[in-house]
Image (cartoon, rainbow, N blue to C red; front, side):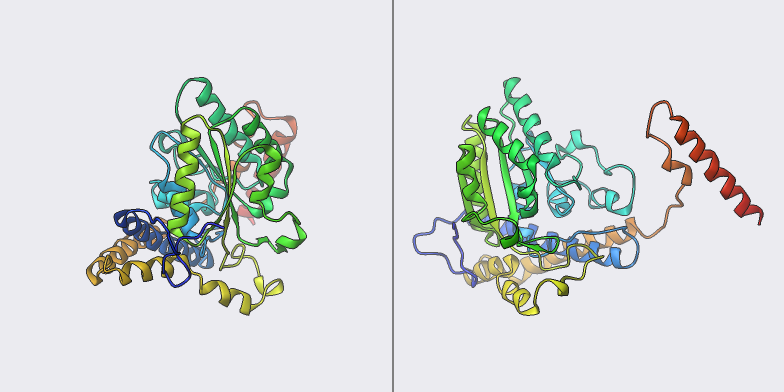
Length: 348
């Protein structure tokens, strides 16, 4: 497994770390992503969001997944990758519009080069490969980075996406965030391969296992995979060894399938604390820097709270809008039934 900084922030022997300024920017983004997760989780508990699948503990994957891409590249996120979407430059309120319960993703995918967050497991991986292959056929050097979790690797769509990408040398980087649970199903009930990265051999593409809580290692591994894809080398499968510290969503009780001791073990591997230790230990992160970064994070959190402070009344008839260009007979009947019931309720 590729690891450049150990859990205390000390570099591995002979490690070639990214430039200090890159690590400092990575730390800033980690702080923003952590605050984003905390604030979004709070909004979900308050009923301001319908749901929020937190990526707390996985922020290094979220941040670096966005950082290594150029403006012309594409990011294909899942429902757990809101922090990555925000790190890509999408307005934080727009990022959470889908979690608020709106019918659309909240941002312009074409403008930001960020696909809508996918809730069905692995279906977006095929779309990612298609976008990458289309760009390649047009002669563009666009790279697509597709995010997924370990549970998605048990889906047929994952296999089809990897196989197609390898056969056609599509410029795609698959970043599997192995957070150890597919909701509540542990890894050893999903897969008996030596690692998820090892599956790359079957597709004929490089597979790399990297410490997903080590921002420096992720920068190195993902940066190389993106460059390889851009240069025509084809896809790479990267497995990031990480952990979801929060519940699967605000509706989950993780105490039913994992122990507090296990969570404590992973808290000691926190990506944010690890990088902070490194930067503080080398004198690259001063008190003033920390104050500035945390003030920026608080401004972002304030904007999130303001963005979801008011509840917008829902129009029940939106249930039937945008389903078909020409509504079916069944939809028309259902809409009429709902109108009658609402009218009766108002009259009572």
